[in-house]
Length: 254
Length: 241
Image (tube, rainbow over all chains, first blue to last red; front, side):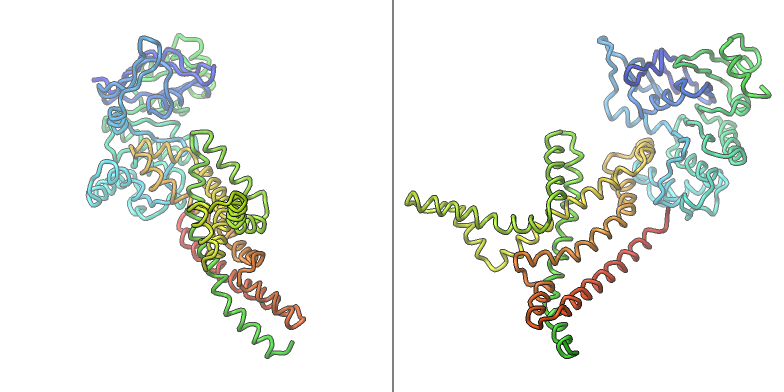
């Protein structure tokens, strides 16, 4: 079953086309990595799917629910607010710079949405949050504030915060770009563990080795297009595409 | 001036201190909520509202408070006088509304109410700019994170944005409140009986500038207390960076 279906998605800022005719599907349990040079539209794609940017055209479906369609007049029609909200709760997003709430403790960050959006009881939310924190290796940090944590710990809190809503699909927007190599490792380990649990994920990343190891599908983007997609071996080892080859050559050891 | 005189001056100033404090607290009470409203109006998407708000802020910050006090204080008397003159020339009575204004300006609280109006309008403009600065300093990522968690707009504002804005505006607000303590002395321009007016009168009585220094000491002590209060508030919000 496809969790995410994107068809002919397009998006421009002013007159600059940043996404051109993007189509791809994400199946349940799949881990998809989106790679490509800076400015290729990877993050914009993620932001459009997450309703943080308005698309200009195309179709997006999440968990069988319509998010947007292009009408006969060529204009984009988004589904009613109620549907968009339902879709939003099926999707989790982990930001490059975490975007934790600095005035709330680790625990408060995680239970905020379960308590105030899903209207769970506080105790239930806390119990679930503690399980998530244990999974993230952050037991004992419940009362800490984001500013007291390392970048890697902050990013793990933000993953826990996204997981607290039990999303069907989890997006990562360059989750390790703000971290030094040592801290990068701890985040990648967490994502790998989630992949082993068959969590459906879409990861925008510059970590090629990681993308190859963790994902079962790779999308290579450049200039707003999907240049090539396929399984990791196909892309990283046997690609016939010149642009892909040229891009991957810059990453040593590939 | 001998010690007895100084003590006498201090006692008289102490007697008028409540008037200074009344002006200070009532201005704070009205100008801070009004400042929030002005911030909100300025960010209104309907452009004319935002332009008018900008004009209001420009005038309030661009002209002396002393002049604003005089303008507010004499506005009603001038309007009433104009109406009376016209009525006398035409041989008619002034309208009910003008009679009402006439009564207002002769009521005991008229001066104080006008002072609060002038001070609140002026300080609201400054507070609005402080609040706007605080609001705009919150990174866009905070709104995006809240929206990704399915929070509604009011939830995002009251639970995520506002608490952070409050922390950020405390230093600038404390500055403004300290200035307000000293600005209450501008009320002397319409002879409101607060400590600066009394100090000036006693300066003449004693032919000495010592009463002014004593008044200065009063403001200094008041502002020391204000400073301590704000240090305490800042500490309270220091639990995160």
